[in-house]
Length: 184
Length: 373
Image (cartoon, rainbow over all chains, first blue to last red):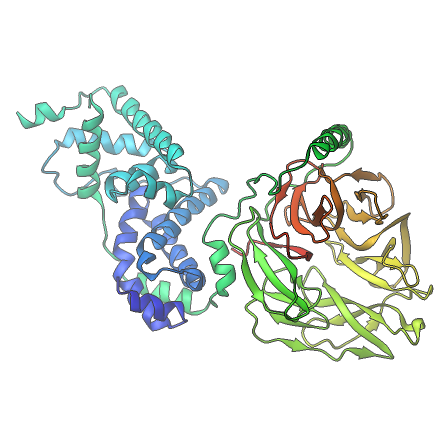
């Protein structure tokens, strides 16, 4: 992301902000959809994150950190969105087909299906730590910074999320292929 | 999925193949429309909000001497007793739909020989200069967007500073406080050459117009406005004794001007009103050589409680409620210091958080805003 654009947007240049939006909205959509697992909610969360970003940009000191900062706003927005939905007790619609529609070249359909249902059973907070770690590939310390929590707490949350996912998958009737089985 | 590394591999592959970065038709336009209609926050507020506004306690910044520890233990016991009393009494913490935002305070700037306004997160981090000196008695508007000063208003980013006509029927208009809807100000009026005009006046926050008199001191002292009641129907104020920086707590009816003394106890020149409307808070009058305390009392004068700030303080004044009603912010000089720092504590006197740690600077005019999400 061009730091000059960030500097211009920070100074109130909305056209520069529009270019930042165009350059980052796809990435934010992907993250929000993985965490919230609902396209409409994800769209709301992304929009809220951009509105928050526009209002808060004057406080961003390091333009080079724009993407990480924007990710943090999105994560917070996802959590706020989920809380709002919970308070209103709206029944969450599932994703169309409730599973991937892209062929997975590394896992069998059964594996994908099991992981999908396992992720579905997790909380938003649990999915968030998994997305930060395994989709964004953030180191523990940086993921912790995004969530505003100590590294130790991040580690324990990650451990609990994996344990919860494993428990859900293990409880499934269908056996799940191991890496060794899939590569032989 | 029998091994940890398998989870790692499965999830990376799964996220990679299922992540959908597609952009919906019109999504960018919707975002740009939503943002174009909103103002950017001033840098100081945006910087404070880049981290959560937590109230995680920091330890007191200065080491306490041995006698101080003894005093602290005694005070802790008193606080514990007070806390038990509060717990078993009628104090009820309000529900907290409102999120605590930045704490504003004034700091004396020797070079300017006047006050500058600063803001800080409730955990004491992220201090920012809001408005440079000179400025007097800053008060945040209910929406957190403006600051009332003597006598006028200014945006929190320092722009659009409007100074209102500061005289009305012989009274000089000075420090003011906001009505809950942000439309009116209760402002102190005074004239040392004609004390009959001393009292509280109401004025429009937009332009300082539509001035009406609310109270008459009648004792050659000053009526100093405190917080409004949450329903906007009453203003709490301190009716000061002539020539003194102390007085008693009164409440005035905004519609009729009728005022009544809440309690006869003498207090400092500020009274705060809790956001649930149930409590008034003020500092006990300062007695040289004696520790001050805070009092909580119902607006009808019943249920008087005392809170002792839990440190060997020289003085502690200006208590004001947090927006969620669970804490008090105040200024306190510890030990023999003659300059105060800003602190917060729970309304039962526990969980003291030192907000500023500037032994060479004096801080006062504490106000606690909402988090304007």
